[in-house]
Structure formats: structure tokens, C-alpha cells
Amino acid sequence: MTDRTTTDIRHLLLRCQFCETWNRIDAARAVHRPKCGSCGRPMLLDRPYPLSDETFERTIQESEVPIFVDFYADWCGPCKIIAPVVDELAAAYQGRVLVAKLDTDRAPKMSMKFNVMGIPTAIVFRDGAEVARQTGAVPKRALEELLTRALA
Ligand SMILES: [Zn+2]
Image 1: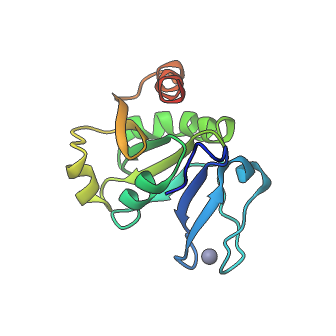
Image 2: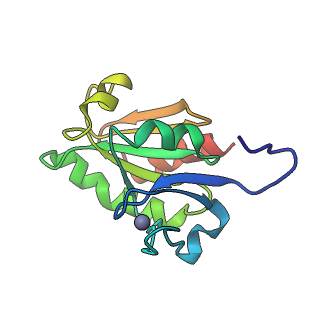
């Protein structure tokens, strides 16, 4: 693990969506369209980053910025209502918070492990632990408040 007392650089650990190589990315450089070190394709951090049962735990445990996860499903109407808001948050907070999404149909293990009883559910993690959660199609300010708490 990086010693935060000797550096202000915070990293994200993300698996490339194309070649499945794990990349450590300087969070502050998220706005500069970082590329995968293996295949050279962009990591696309200006929109919610898709996680899976395979990638979820490693990403939340080894990333050094708060992670906001939208637990959703394609068939879920209220999820579609908040999706554009989550997109906006991803763009607005890039570099400070990793905004991610998890398809609960494709990731049943993580949905169960984190006790997601209804969707949409937004959970914010910091240093691998849950720090805030909100269930339902809540207004944008409620989701922003989750992020504010995580960054405090
Ligand atoms: Zn790649």
C-alpha cells in the first residue's frame, strides 16, 4: 500500500474493460484520459466505470479515493431515472471520487455481500469500507450529499 504521509498522489486500481489488465492510475490524472498500460485503450473515467463480481472488491480495497457505486439493473425503471444523474456526478467528480456502477443481475455475489435489498442503491466506500448508502430514485442533491460526506 502507498504511504499517504509521504505522497499526495492517490491511485485508482481498475481493470481495463477491453484487455482485462489491472492498471494503477493517478487519480489526479483522470481528467487527462488515461490509457491502459497494456492495450493503450482509454480508461473512460468521465462516466460510471463498470465493475463486476470479479473486479469489485479489489477495486474498492486498493483505490485511494472514495468510490461511489450505483447498484442497478437494466430492467429497473427507477434506476433509469437516476442514471443520468450518476453520469453527471461521474463527470463532475472525476479525479476526486471514482463513480462506478454494478449490474446486480450480473454481479449477484457482491449484491448479496453488501446486502443490497432494493435498487437503485448507491453506496460510497472509502478505504474498502462502506461509509454511506442511499436506496431509491433519490434527488441529485441526496446523492451529492453522499459524496460530500465521503470526501469530508
Ligand atoms: Zn487494456
